[in-house]
Image (spheres, rainbow, N blue to C red):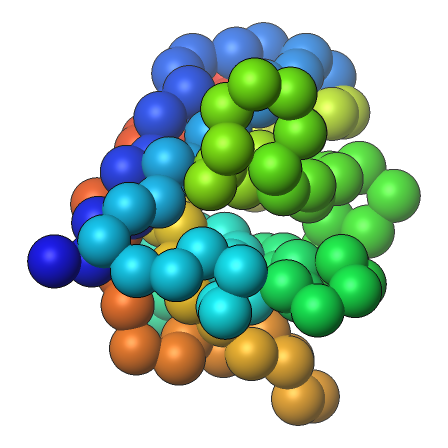
Length: 123
């Protein structure tokens, strides 16, 4: 079965960094674009970033451009997608989910979700 396991969340001060990891299994990893979504309390879930499988092209929500970087399959950990988050702000506080994704006028989910990891940014 499809599994997307997110990890790496935590508590960090504003201006700090975190790196999230998403380990994928149960499907052909290279057939899917994988991305990150987040949901803050009282808000709708939003697409943060997506990386395509075909050419590694990346997409970001305007709110995180220049601060977040998505990557996939680097290092010894195959079938893994990373989200490097720098210059974190309190408004980045949310539960972050990795999921299969597509890109239109925004990043959207294409069917598979993983469990989330909490990111809390203190001011």
